Every structure is written in C-alpha cells, then in structure tokens.
Image (cartoon, rainbow, N blue to C red; front, side):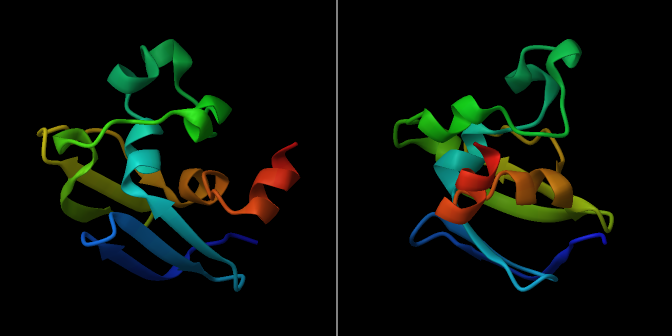
Length: 114
C-alpha cells in the first residue's frame, strides 16, 4: 500500500512542517531536521551517496539558527513529493513521500528503525 499525505501544513512561526498521512499517522518535522536531511546530491556528498532513505545521522545534527533553516517557499514536486526553498537560497532536492515518511522523527518511527 502506497502511503501519501492527506494534509500538509508548514508553520513558519514554530519552524515546523506537519503531515497527516493516508494510514492515519501524523508527522511533525522541524525545519532544522528537514534541512539537515536535504536529499540533494550536494548535501549528500555526491550522487554515489544518494539514497531513498535518510541518513540516521541527521537526527543528531543540530543546525544553528539562520537562513539555512528558515523556509522561504514550499512547492509540490508533481504528485510524489516536496521541494523546499530556504532563505539561504538553497532550492535543491526532492523530498519524496517515501523519504519524508522514513524521516518521521516521532518515537514510534524511530524505534521501528532500531
């Protein structure tokens, strides 16, 4: 069964993105986590490091406040994901639905990964 968002809400005031999923699960992502997990080739260190799964290291990164974690714009990438534009003008990487669901930071999802 393919899981997809039924509702997406970006909140610039608390720097978070909330997604309600088709299977009833809800995920809340900080902008800092989303930027740390950027799936673009540049942030991943080259095409050879590309993966449909986020690197587990992103959950322990603490990015400093600044333009790199302030969302400027959010747009759909067809019907399969999202593209973020950050205030430091970084506008690369498609966050697919699969990738975003695998990136869910909730305790239940993180326990399933271990």
